[in-house]
Length: 205
Image: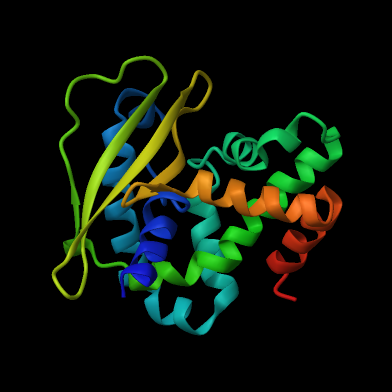
């Protein structure tokens, strides 16, 4: 079940970046952003798993509450929209970013329930980050004992510290994957149509 656990990993550690850590810690140490995610997800699920399994809205709230401050959805949305960002209006950009973010929550939030701390090994960060970007590498062990490399792209913002913006599973970047999907859809329909579809998906329709 590599694909399913890959989705869960994206949700939990990258798209999710489920943190409740002090901003100062995030600014000083990108590794803390990922390691704290593991701890905070474990605590949240231990206390409320039954509720999240029964009440989808509560699960979405849990993911969003911890994700929103730590995931750079503006930058991720811009990268996903790709060449169409240059011709999009400010309103289209905002609606796309919000629609894409909320659609991801709707699509992947259930993956949080599959999380098991013991299956995620966070690799040591070699040296201090150079510039405003870095990558945290992890290894996920699947139920069949197969291991999968899952790496997280982080960017440092002067006003908000380190934030996750990309995840790469077995060499496949979710940014590049979604960008190809969105680009094809925009060319077949229109940007407005794509935005409407994302908003509809996010609303659960």
